[in-house]
Image 1 (spheres, rainbow, N blue to C red):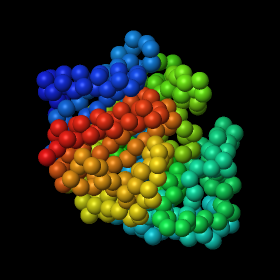
Image 2: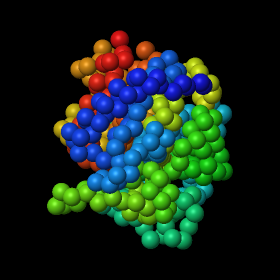
Image 3: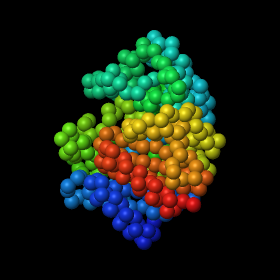
Image 4: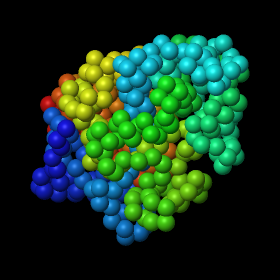
Length: 376
């Protein structure tokens, strides 16, 4: 897939617009890109890598995309479905029973598609699940074994669907889907995403975990909001990202240009190289599997209402003619948002190294503005 850099004129216009938004919302850095028909038509990154410091970002700086990683995990699953190594209705117990014996019947019966559409009955992160994510076992095992240990500790829980919509946004569901990918490939999920998404799409800045190199401030670092309203830059180390055990649910980082490559490939309905999955499989991934209930102020990464496919929300906005593919991602220290309109082969991606409501609103304003400027 050939993607061209934006013209200097458009880049300068976007610089000014992003700077205005960044200043209005008190963000350290803000980046955005628009892709149309396989080409980057506008892209810019403004601000500082650290709030209050003069460490300018560049267009190649890595931003954390949080739960927007989920669409990549779902696509890897689709690749394995095409290869016959998994089915959308492959059950957790069927795939993982050798390593995780004694699962509850309801957990064992959950399917790959249900895990990826948040409709398996596995709950959203609660205190028990969070304690497992932050287990001290992290210092004793490789990640594949750590995930098995996590599931072995949770396996006896029965899962159940809420009344009305079965949708429950579940990071644990994506961890288990990642484990199924690991089982049938014999590789860590981390290796699979590099081999089948980052490398084929030439996403050279893409990686996993904390975006800045240990000991360097070579990327926009995330910020933690404190109870007194101040923000603490989180440079490196375990506290600067989600626990690595839940990587399949959201710990990728990359430049806004590389993120736009992923957006463009999806906007093109999988019809442009590389052939990660067939257009038919991608359409299935991007199609609604479950309706989401209406929620006020949903957590970052979750749609307020609409539909959910496999790693994608399908949501109607009052500034678009029809539903768009979308997702928000945050590790509570960064924020990324994306909208994709396959009908126009158009996508917009936005990222900032700041969390919270203001960051979410600011990114939403940028999405709306760029979509309405460059869309029909």
